Length: 315
Ligand code: PLP
Image 1 (cartoon, rainbow, N blue to C red):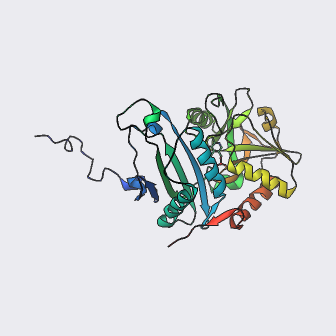
Image 2 (spheres, rainbow, N blue to C red):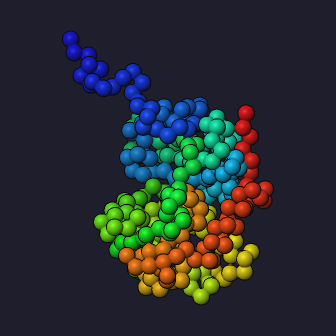
Image 3 (cartoon, rainbow, N blue to C red):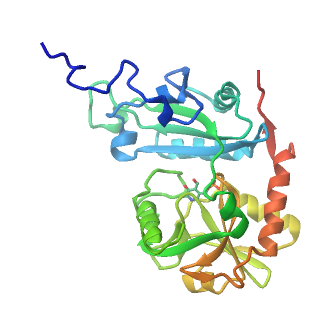
Protein backbone atom coordinates (compact mmCIF):
# COMPACT_ATOMS: atom_id res chain seq x y z
CA UNK A 1 0.00 0.00 0.00
CA UNK A 2 1.21 3.53 -0.73
CA UNK A 3 1.88 5.44 2.47
CA UNK A 4 1.44 9.22 2.55
CA UNK A 5 5.19 9.73 3.08
CA UNK A 6 6.17 7.50 0.16
CA UNK A 7 3.84 9.63 -1.99
CA UNK A 8 5.97 12.63 -1.05
CA UNK A 9 9.59 11.72 -1.79
CA UNK A 10 12.03 14.24 -0.39
CA UNK A 11 10.09 14.80 2.84
CA UNK A 12 12.22 13.43 5.65
CA UNK A 13 11.15 12.96 9.20
CA UNK A 14 12.39 16.41 10.20
CA UNK A 15 10.43 18.08 7.38
CA UNK A 16 13.10 20.75 7.09
CA UNK A 17 16.32 21.42 5.29
CA UNK A 18 18.42 23.15 7.93
CA UNK A 19 20.71 24.67 5.30
CA UNK A 20 17.84 26.93 4.24
CA UNK A 21 17.69 28.66 7.65
CA UNK A 22 20.10 31.17 9.14
CA UNK A 23 21.69 30.14 12.41
CA UNK A 24 19.52 31.48 15.18
CA UNK A 25 17.11 30.83 18.02
CA UNK A 26 13.37 31.41 18.06
CA UNK A 27 10.78 31.53 20.81
CA UNK A 28 7.23 30.38 20.19
CA UNK A 29 4.53 28.41 22.02
CA UNK A 30 6.44 29.08 25.24
CA UNK A 31 9.69 27.42 24.16
CA UNK A 32 13.05 28.17 22.56
CA UNK A 33 13.78 26.40 19.26
CA UNK A 34 16.42 26.36 16.53
CA UNK A 35 15.32 28.70 13.71
CA UNK A 36 14.74 25.72 11.42
CA UNK A 37 12.04 24.40 13.74
CA UNK A 38 10.06 27.62 14.27
CA UNK A 39 6.89 27.17 12.19
CA UNK A 40 3.44 28.73 12.15
CA UNK A 41 0.18 27.16 11.09
CA UNK A 42 -0.92 27.82 7.51
CA UNK A 43 -4.25 28.80 9.08
CA UNK A 44 -2.71 31.67 11.07
CA UNK A 45 -4.30 34.99 10.02
CA UNK A 46 -0.81 36.45 10.11
CA UNK A 47 -0.05 34.37 7.01
CA UNK A 48 -3.51 34.36 5.40
CA UNK A 49 -4.34 38.05 5.83
CA UNK A 50 -1.08 39.80 6.90
CA UNK A 51 -2.93 40.27 10.19
CA UNK A 52 0.11 40.83 12.36
CA UNK A 53 2.36 43.47 13.81
CA UNK A 54 6.05 43.20 14.49
CA UNK A 55 9.16 45.04 15.46
CA UNK A 56 12.85 44.57 14.81
CA UNK A 57 15.60 45.63 17.17
CA UNK A 58 19.27 45.00 16.59
CA UNK A 59 22.17 43.91 18.75
CA UNK A 60 25.59 45.34 17.95
CA UNK A 61 28.73 44.18 19.80
CA UNK A 62 26.59 42.45 22.41
CA UNK A 63 24.25 45.41 23.10
CA UNK A 64 20.63 46.01 22.12
CA UNK A 65 20.15 49.46 20.53
CA UNK A 66 17.16 51.54 21.71
CA UNK A 67 15.28 48.53 23.03
CA UNK A 68 12.71 50.64 24.96
CA UNK A 69 11.55 52.44 21.82
CA UNK A 70 11.08 49.18 19.92
CA UNK A 71 9.16 47.61 22.79
CA UNK A 72 6.92 50.71 23.08
CA UNK A 73 6.11 50.62 19.36
CA UNK A 74 5.38 46.88 19.47
CA UNK A 75 3.01 47.11 22.46
CA UNK A 76 1.29 50.17 20.98
CA UNK A 77 0.76 48.31 17.66
CA UNK A 78 -0.70 45.27 19.42
CA UNK A 79 -3.05 47.45 21.46
CA UNK A 80 -4.36 49.25 18.39
CA UNK A 81 -4.86 45.95 16.54
CA UNK A 82 -6.65 44.57 19.64
CA UNK A 83 -4.10 41.84 20.15
CA UNK A 84 -2.76 40.60 23.46
CA UNK A 85 0.11 38.38 24.52
CA UNK A 86 0.56 36.75 27.93
CA UNK A 87 3.85 38.61 28.55
CA UNK A 88 4.60 42.07 29.92
CA UNK A 89 7.41 44.34 28.70
CA UNK A 90 10.01 42.96 31.12
CA UNK A 91 9.24 39.34 30.24
CA UNK A 92 9.34 40.11 26.50
CA UNK A 93 12.73 41.82 26.89
CA UNK A 94 14.04 38.77 28.73
CA UNK A 95 12.71 36.46 25.97
CA UNK A 96 14.47 38.55 23.29
CA UNK A 97 17.63 38.60 25.34
CA UNK A 98 17.49 34.81 25.80
CA UNK A 99 17.07 34.30 22.04
CA UNK A 100 20.23 36.35 21.43
CA UNK A 101 22.19 34.73 24.27
CA UNK A 102 21.21 31.20 23.19
CA UNK A 103 22.15 31.97 19.58
CA UNK A 104 25.54 33.28 20.72
CA UNK A 105 25.37 36.13 18.17
CA UNK A 106 27.18 39.32 19.20
CA UNK A 107 25.54 41.22 16.34
CA UNK A 108 21.99 40.15 15.65
CA UNK A 109 18.73 40.99 13.94
CA UNK A 110 16.03 40.37 16.52
CA UNK A 111 12.38 40.27 15.59
CA UNK A 112 9.23 40.11 17.74
CA UNK A 113 5.97 39.29 15.95
CA UNK A 114 2.39 39.08 17.13
CA UNK A 115 0.06 37.35 14.70
CA UNK A 116 -3.72 37.21 15.01
CA UNK A 117 -3.35 33.41 15.15
CA UNK A 118 -6.34 31.21 14.39
CA UNK A 119 -9.35 30.07 16.33
CA UNK A 120 -9.68 26.51 17.65
CA UNK A 121 -12.96 26.22 15.71
CA UNK A 122 -11.57 27.92 12.55
CA UNK A 123 -14.08 30.72 13.11
CA UNK A 124 -13.84 33.71 10.76
CA UNK A 125 -14.33 36.05 13.73
CA UNK A 126 -10.95 37.64 14.60
CA UNK A 127 -12.09 38.07 18.20
CA UNK A 128 -11.97 34.31 18.60
CA UNK A 129 -8.43 33.91 17.36
CA UNK A 130 -5.64 33.10 19.80
CA UNK A 131 -2.94 35.70 19.25
CA UNK A 132 0.56 34.33 19.00
CA UNK A 133 3.96 35.75 19.92
CA UNK A 134 6.99 34.68 17.92
CA UNK A 135 10.47 36.06 18.55
CA UNK A 136 13.81 35.23 17.04
CA UNK A 137 17.46 36.25 16.81
CA UNK A 138 19.49 35.65 13.65
CA UNK A 139 22.75 37.21 12.39
CA UNK A 140 22.64 41.00 11.85
CA UNK A 141 21.42 41.89 8.35
CA UNK A 142 21.53 45.16 6.46
CA UNK A 143 19.55 46.72 3.60
CA UNK A 144 22.92 47.73 2.08
CA UNK A 145 25.97 45.50 1.72
CA UNK A 146 29.54 46.63 2.54
CA UNK A 147 30.27 47.92 -0.95
CA UNK A 148 26.96 49.84 -1.09
CA UNK A 149 27.62 51.37 2.33
CA UNK A 150 30.98 52.65 1.09
CA UNK A 151 29.97 54.03 -2.32
CA UNK A 152 26.26 54.73 -1.65
CA UNK A 153 23.15 52.91 -2.87
CA UNK A 154 21.59 53.33 -6.29
CA UNK A 155 17.89 53.98 -5.88
CA UNK A 156 14.96 54.28 -8.29
CA UNK A 157 11.75 56.15 -7.56
CA UNK A 158 8.79 53.93 -8.38
CA UNK A 159 5.41 55.42 -9.25
CA UNK A 160 3.80 52.75 -7.10
CA UNK A 161 1.73 54.46 -4.41
CA UNK A 162 2.31 53.41 -0.81
CA UNK A 163 -0.86 51.95 0.70
CA UNK A 164 -2.76 55.02 2.04
CA UNK A 165 -2.62 55.64 5.79
CA UNK A 166 -6.44 55.76 5.78
CA UNK A 167 -6.40 52.07 4.73
CA UNK A 168 -3.54 50.69 6.81
CA UNK A 169 -2.10 52.77 9.64
CA UNK A 170 1.62 52.94 8.82
CA UNK A 171 2.50 53.82 12.41
CA UNK A 172 1.61 50.21 13.30
CA UNK A 173 4.58 48.28 11.92
CA UNK A 174 3.05 45.81 9.48
CA UNK A 175 3.68 43.31 6.68
CA UNK A 176 1.56 45.05 3.99
CA UNK A 177 4.47 45.05 1.58
CA UNK A 178 3.03 44.26 -1.88
CA UNK A 179 3.51 47.93 -2.89
CA UNK A 180 7.10 47.91 -1.57
CA UNK A 181 7.91 44.61 -3.29
CA UNK A 182 6.47 45.94 -6.58
CA UNK A 183 8.67 49.02 -6.08
CA UNK A 184 11.70 46.75 -5.71
CA UNK A 185 10.96 44.91 -8.96
CA UNK A 186 10.43 48.28 -10.73
CA UNK A 187 13.83 49.37 -9.37
CA UNK A 188 15.60 46.18 -10.51
CA UNK A 189 14.06 46.60 -13.99
CA UNK A 190 15.66 50.07 -14.12
CA UNK A 191 19.06 48.72 -13.00
CA UNK A 192 18.80 50.21 -9.49
CA UNK A 193 19.45 48.41 -6.20
CA UNK A 194 16.44 49.49 -4.19
CA UNK A 195 13.32 51.62 -4.39
CA UNK A 196 11.53 54.60 -2.97
CA UNK A 197 7.80 54.72 -3.44
CA UNK A 198 5.46 57.70 -3.33
CA UNK A 199 2.49 58.67 -1.18
CA UNK A 200 -1.04 59.42 -2.44
CA UNK A 201 0.02 63.03 -3.25
CA UNK A 202 3.03 61.99 -5.32
CA UNK A 203 5.56 62.94 -2.63
CA UNK A 204 8.14 60.46 -1.42
CA UNK A 205 6.98 58.02 1.23
CA UNK A 206 9.51 55.30 2.11
CA UNK A 207 11.19 52.19 0.77
CA UNK A 208 11.21 48.45 1.52
CA UNK A 209 12.20 48.56 5.18
CA UNK A 210 13.54 52.12 5.41
CA UNK A 211 12.82 55.85 5.70
CA UNK A 212 14.57 58.49 3.62
CA UNK A 213 16.29 61.83 4.33
CA UNK A 214 17.58 64.55 2.04
CA UNK A 215 20.18 67.19 2.88
CA UNK A 216 20.06 70.58 1.13
CA UNK A 217 22.40 73.44 2.10
CA UNK A 218 23.13 71.73 5.44
CA UNK A 219 19.43 71.29 6.43
CA UNK A 220 17.71 67.91 6.56
CA UNK A 221 14.20 66.89 5.57
CA UNK A 222 12.35 63.56 5.86
CA UNK A 223 8.83 62.57 4.75
CA UNK A 224 6.21 62.59 7.49
CA UNK A 225 2.96 61.59 5.77
CA UNK A 226 2.06 57.93 5.30
CA UNK A 227 5.29 56.46 6.64
CA UNK A 228 6.36 54.25 9.49
CA UNK A 229 7.97 56.58 12.06
CA UNK A 230 11.17 54.58 12.07
CA UNK A 231 13.27 54.38 15.20
CA UNK A 232 16.42 55.01 13.16
CA UNK A 233 14.65 58.05 11.64
CA UNK A 234 13.89 59.30 15.15
CA UNK A 235 17.49 58.58 16.17
CA UNK A 236 18.75 60.67 13.24
CA UNK A 237 16.48 63.55 14.33
CA UNK A 238 18.00 63.33 17.83
CA UNK A 239 21.56 63.13 16.44
CA UNK A 240 20.85 66.23 14.33
CA UNK A 241 19.90 68.13 17.51
CA UNK A 242 23.21 67.04 19.05
CA UNK A 243 25.22 68.06 15.98
CA UNK A 244 23.33 71.34 15.43
CA UNK A 245 21.71 70.40 12.08
CA UNK A 246 18.17 71.56 11.39
CA UNK A 247 15.73 68.80 10.41
CA UNK A 248 12.20 69.09 9.18
CA UNK A 249 9.59 66.28 8.99
CA UNK A 250 7.56 67.40 5.95
CA UNK A 251 6.67 66.52 2.36
CA UNK A 252 9.62 65.76 0.09
CA UNK A 253 8.92 65.72 -3.65
CA UNK A 254 10.84 63.48 -6.10
CA UNK A 255 12.20 66.72 -7.65
CA UNK A 256 13.64 67.82 -4.28
CA UNK A 257 15.25 64.41 -3.86
CA UNK A 258 16.91 64.65 -7.29
CA UNK A 259 18.19 68.17 -6.48
CA UNK A 260 19.50 67.26 -3.00
CA UNK A 261 23.13 67.67 -1.91
CA UNK A 262 22.96 64.37 -0.02
CA UNK A 263 20.46 61.54 0.38
CA UNK A 264 20.43 58.66 2.84
CA UNK A 265 18.04 55.99 4.04
CA UNK A 266 17.55 54.71 7.59
CA UNK A 267 16.63 51.32 9.05
CA UNK A 268 17.30 49.13 12.05
CA UNK A 269 18.64 46.76 9.37
CA UNK A 270 21.76 48.75 8.47
CA UNK A 271 21.46 52.09 10.29
CA UNK A 272 22.17 55.18 8.18
CA UNK A 273 22.91 54.20 4.58
CA UNK A 274 24.06 56.67 1.93
CA UNK A 275 22.37 57.00 -1.47
CA UNK A 276 24.54 58.40 -4.27
CA UNK A 277 22.46 57.73 -7.36
CA UNK A 278 18.75 58.31 -8.03
CA UNK A 279 17.11 57.09 -11.25
CA UNK A 280 20.49 56.68 -12.94
CA UNK A 281 21.76 60.21 -12.11
CA UNK A 282 24.34 61.00 -9.40
CA UNK A 283 23.18 62.80 -6.26
CA UNK A 284 25.25 66.05 -6.38
CA UNK A 285 28.77 64.81 -7.29
CA UNK A 286 27.85 61.17 -6.63
CA UNK A 287 29.97 60.82 -3.46
CA UNK A 288 28.87 60.05 0.10
CA UNK A 289 28.33 63.49 1.69
CA UNK A 290 29.92 64.93 4.83
CA UNK A 291 26.64 65.35 6.77
CA UNK A 292 25.77 61.71 6.10
CA UNK A 293 29.25 60.61 7.24
CA UNK A 294 29.08 62.62 10.48
CA UNK A 295 25.66 61.16 11.28
CA UNK A 296 26.82 57.62 10.48
CA UNK A 297 29.85 57.98 12.77
CA UNK A 298 27.83 59.33 15.70
CA UNK A 299 25.10 56.72 15.15
CA UNK A 300 27.57 53.83 15.56
CA UNK A 301 29.33 55.52 18.52
CA UNK A 302 25.97 55.65 20.33
CA UNK A 303 25.82 51.84 20.27
CA UNK A 304 28.28 51.79 23.18
CA UNK A 305 26.48 54.49 25.17
CA UNK A 306 24.43 52.99 28.07
CA UNK A 307 21.83 55.75 27.60
CA UNK A 308 21.07 54.34 24.12
CA UNK A 309 21.92 50.65 24.47
CA UNK A 310 21.55 47.67 26.84
CA UNK A 311 23.94 44.75 27.28
CA UNK A 312 22.80 41.22 26.44
CA UNK A 313 23.69 38.79 29.23
CA UNK A 314 25.41 35.82 27.58
CA UNK A 315 25.83 32.56 29.53
N1 PLP B 1 9.60 51.92 6.88
C1 PLP B 1 9.22 50.63 6.76
C2 PLP B 1 8.08 50.29 5.85
C3 PLP B 1 9.87 49.63 7.49
O1 PLP B 1 9.46 48.35 7.38
C4 PLP B 1 10.96 49.97 8.32
C5 PLP B 1 11.68 48.93 9.07
O2 PLP B 1 11.48 47.76 8.89
C6 PLP B 1 11.35 51.32 8.40
C7 PLP B 1 10.64 52.27 7.67
C8 PLP B 1 12.51 51.73 9.28
O3 PLP B 1 12.14 51.66 10.63
P1 PLP B 1 13.22 51.43 11.78
O4 PLP B 1 14.19 52.57 11.68
O5 PLP B 1 12.41 51.48 13.05
O6 PLP B 1 13.86 50.12 11.54
